[in-house]
Image 1: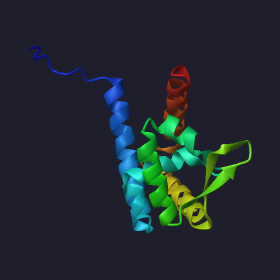
Image 2: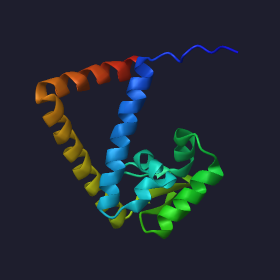
Image 3: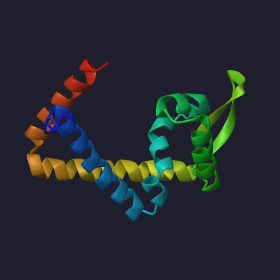
Image 4: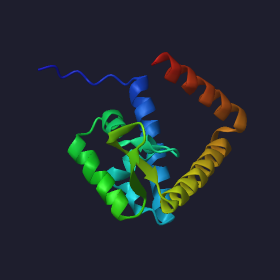
Length: 144
């Protein structure tokens, strides 16, 4: 068995930074009364978007089973966050859209994101934060 220490690499740094941001973001959303953001179903929100999304596309992008996505959407619908609608381009498909309550949660999410970015600007300085964002953008584009 190989007992070599795992390599400390940029991937771990990016993962830890992302995890730290997500933790702070989730805490901010919970404080604003959106406790479901701390649950697994909260991870679907970014896949829906303001215009809505097909349920099948959410399954594909989430890499979850159809059953898991169905359950999470059922729960979000029961809580009044999303609603299901017929897809005008495909009678067999369902569109998932935010309700007024869901859109208010997105507004709160934007407020939390602005607060986090402000705290990062205080920590790093606006210039360094700008360079970090530009560097991350290069990394993201290189991965596509």
